[in-house]
Amino acid sequence: MNNGNEIYVLTDVSLITCIVQRGLADDIVNAASEAGAQGGTVYFARGYGIRERLGTLGVAIEAEKEVIMIVVSDEQADRVFEMIYTSAKLHTPGMGIMFVTRLEKAATYIPPEVIRNLERKRSEGDAND
Amino acid sequence: MIDVRFPTGKLITCILPQGHALGLMEKLKKEKGITTMSFHHARGAGRGGHSRRGIGHYVENNIITIAVSDEQADDIFEFIFLEAGISEDHRGIVFMERLNMLTPFELPDELKGK
View 1 (cartoon, chains in turn green, cyan):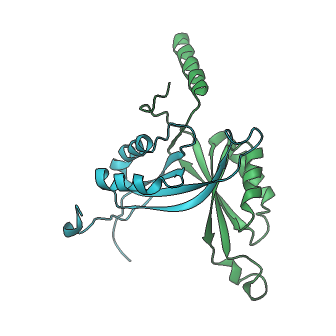
View 2 (cartoon, helix red, strand yellow):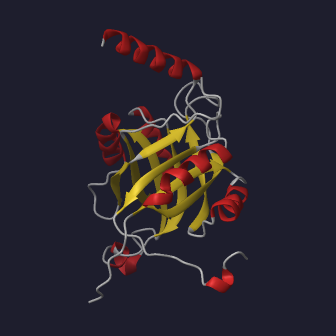
View 3 (tube, helix red, strand yellow):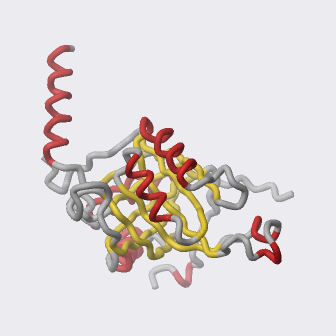
């Protein structure tokens, strides 16, 4: 059991970061959720760069951005990445960018039943060795 | 060209419920001597608790980012986990990634301990 003094560290996890125009983040988090992500965190930022090269007088692209952070397991990363890419239309110039960074470790609340299952599997594995 | 070799390091990111960042940063400064950190506000949504289908509604979060040396990283990670109560439900997440280069940040002697 996790009594608060033990740390169950998650490995094989990645962080997907997506930067899009303001107002699009909610749909992206929903799309990621459909692909299996557990949730997402969103904050505002100001972008600079391609806006000056696209559109008339630079008004086509919102300077105000939303940055979305989603932590996923490595095995989910491709699926969630593709889902976001499609739903955010990132193939269109100026819509935004997205990248994946490998996390060394992560820790968060893990439900007791999940820990029990993992410990049972581990003890079964030890018994088979 | 500058001929300086910068050390590698770790970036620790901690997503906490709104209002918890300043207290944790104060503890990191006082008890661990960390001065290379900042926080900003965000909103977050996740599964469980609030909604049975899909993600729940958004709640306000604080995101702390801390750049630390390789030697300090595991200790600081553990400190944050325990002090922020990350093992409890709805208390956030902490994660760590590798930094290829990190500029050293040392306070002048006269400012240390203030």
